[in-house]
Structure formats: C-alpha cells, structure tokens
Image 1 (cartoon, helix red, strand yellow):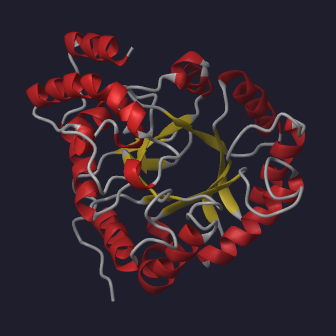
Image 2: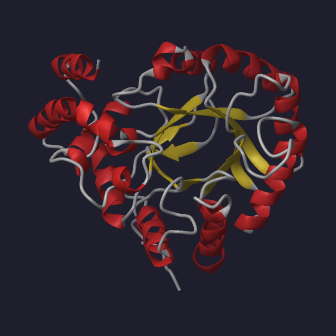
Length: 328
C-alpha cells in the first residue's frame, strides 16, 4: 500500500489560479504521453508516486490520451482506486473533451451531446464522482459558443466538475466564452495552451494578455517543445527517442534545423547553473500570469528535474534578450 511522503508540501510552490480560490502547483504532471496502454504500468505508478511525494497535486488528462483513447484515464483510475483514494481531497484531477474520441458525428468537437457523454465516460474510467477541472479541449467554429458553454455549465451544476477550463482558445474567443460563462455564474478559472521558448502563439493571439485582464489562470502544455528544450537532442538524435519511433509531433528534420538554437540556449542554461529543460520551465514561470507548467515525463527522474526548475525562475534582461534572439 502506497503511503505519501509526510514532507510532500515542504518545497513545492503553489500559485493562485487567476482570481479563483484554487491554488495549483507551479509544476503539474501531464499524462498525455507515457501513461496509456503501451506504457509500463509499474513505471506509471512510480511517476505518479514521485510527483505527489514532491508536492505535485495536479494530474492532467483528457478523454483521448493513450495512445489508445481512454487508456490514460483508465490507468490513472486504477492508481486512484489502489493507491490515491485516501488522498482524493488533496488532489486536483482534470480532464478534457474536444478531439476525436469515437466514430460518427457525435464523437468530437463541442456539441452538448459530445461533452456530456464525454464527462460521463471519463468519470467511469477514472472511477470518480467528479473531476476538479473539466476543459473544452479546442475551439469549435461549427457549434454555437453558447451551446458549448451551456454544456460546461450543466456539467458543473450536475456536480461532475468543480471548475471549468478552456484549451487551445485564442484571446478573442476566450473573451466571448468568458462573458457567457460569467453570465451563467460558472466557475471558469483556467486556460490551457501550448507555450514555450519556441512557441509564442499565446503572446501573439492575445490569449496570455487577455487571461491576465480577465483574471483567469493559464497552464502551459508542451513547455519543452516535445523535447527540443531538453538535453535529449543536444548531441544528436538518440536511437530510442520518440523522433525515431513516432514522428507525429517532432521529426528529424525539425530537430536538425533547430540544433544550433538548442546548443545556444543550452549555453545560457549552463551559465545559470541549470539544465536546458530546467531553464525552459523557469522561463515560462518567470512572470505571474502563468499559473503552472504542465510537464510530462517518461521516468521519475524527469519529474524531479522538472521540479528543480523552481530553484531559479529569475532572469536578467540580458538573458531574456538573448533567449528572444535565439528563439526567432
């Protein structure tokens, strides 16, 4: 039987999620990769234990995480039942719906039909009565925003989620969605978007600025740019890397094109006394607009490395200017 570390809250830093009452750890654990049906279950357990033992209280999923859709939720549900059940009230568990999940016209996007069916399925896989945060996973231009936001409102009122979030929205759509949710008095508190040194989309589409003005939190996925901002590719492409086995999100050509930038950023990190991945996470957390970084892992040691990023999140103007020049 797993027993959590008594000192789990001693070092982790927690940040308020916008203007809500909810605090999230500055580093959260994302279960997008390495937690589904093709992963080693014992390693999944150890990664979850390592995270919680070091103050990571937030575990982020989606209905389609796997690779087999639903398998990450099923695995985490098993861990909840066998190990984490006594700690449920200490945990923030989030899931999402919006991408392709099952065949036919009702298995993706943002209809009321899809979102309410999705939360019911997710709760069964997780073995939970509710999730703490339920996200709409992507904008849907074909479904009226009022319908999608109305479905989120119904999910909260039914007790299946405590808070709602929006993922992969831009600033303009966020503003409109926020107004609808505010009118219905729905606790919309957080946005989840890709953000890293190489991907500044949330700075360019108004999402980051708009979130701050509206008092909403921001949590960032892919903070290491699918591994580009880690030690993984400093000396080339390892044979056992995801680039070699699964080129959907990162391929050899991109790694090779970015290699000089990776080396230059690594030199800045070295002078700061950090690894490249630690500096990349610290860079995201340098201002208070960002609530948390959502970092994945393939082994427990990576989780500990991610947490070490919090030891130094201060940057000089010279460092920030250099990082901006390199990343362009």
